[in-house]
Image (cartoon, rainbow, N blue to C red):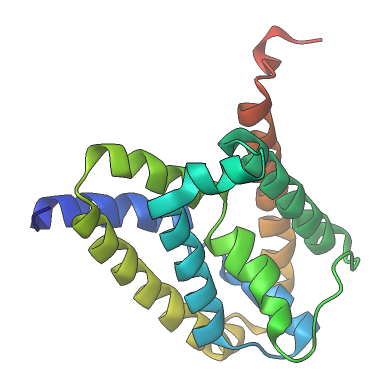
Amino acid sequence: MHFDILEVLATFMVLFAIIDIFGSIPVILDIKSKIGSFYPGKTTLVAFVIMLLFLFIGEPLLGVFGVDISSFAIAGSFILLLMGLEMVLGIQLFKHDAEGGGAIVPIAFPLIAGAGSITTLLSLRAEYQTINILIALSLNMIIVYLVLRMTAFFEKLLGPNGLHILKKFFGIILLAIAIRLFISNTGIDISKGM
């Protein structure tokens, strides 16, 4: 294992795009409005630990439960689908813990440490040195933590109307991501039509 700044930058950019913490701000704000508050440090740490587990023992860990990556991704797609429905329809499907633990699911998993970031980590491991992936992942988790800490700033910046519009828009985006994740892991070919 050796440190390579180019590998760190490459893996950082890939993980940054997949985690997409800035794109998740409306979802995080919606969850925060339901639970009141959450612990950014705890949420970030749980997401980081999940990703570390999958980096080092991901496929064998799922194998213990008889689950493959595709099945895991499909399960994550259902959670994202339900979150999207909540945002678009203005209903509550998840029971959120008012003491801050409610942010672990669905923010830490599957929003931050979701099927996309986990499968990406497994793919990166085949191509890059583990030390460089660890550095890139750690840098991404610092950004995640800072964004989670700044949710009050984003609420003030967007205002109630801006939050409402973003919530509906990103709810639809979340639904589309969930459907794409489901389709890509079931092998359904929608290009052939009905």
